Image (tube, rainbow, N blue to C red; front, side):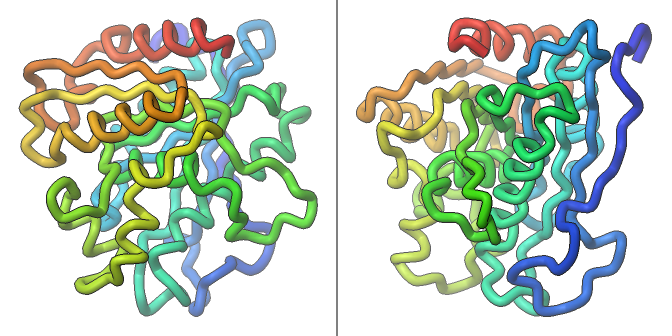
Length: 274
């Protein structure tokens, strides 16, 4: 990126030792990591964002919904941390539906624990997620009162804001992206599990302020995922902004100039005090 003003990225292991919930020893390629994109000190705003790529819980769109996003935020003075999370695999986890959430919570804990070293304000750490990564981001933002990772330091796992880009929100058959649901919850999940991970049902007044963006002609994930989540936020008095474009289909931000998708997000963060 021309004129890129950020410190060269570092890739750090997400866990210092054993990986919670894991039943196998993971190879280096499969182990979860955090990739850091830190703005130069003169540019740093103190705000940070955890970046969660999508991929239907079956793969990670790491370049286009991870690295490209991290670089764009760092260029604007926002520290970005791109999460490579474990994909839900029955043979590798005690309960595959909680593996990705554990990694997202560990990432929040790691960012806040190292806030001083990374020039981050621990009260301005949010999350951005794309597609199934938007489901994971919204899970992080609605399930933070339960720590699924060791957290004896009692560090807050709640993101201060959420940015959800063409997200999967619900596990309800009428709304969900079936591939994401099956990969996360299996073929025949219990009603309790479906409800637990249908994040429109998990919103409270403590849910972070949220920016949502989608295209009405999304042929992969039903736009009503964002609409029901927005309605739940409204009902609970949570600040929310919803941008619906008539056309653009799934992954539309990947095909737009950076400023077209980033500027509205930055406007939302500014209005919310971040």
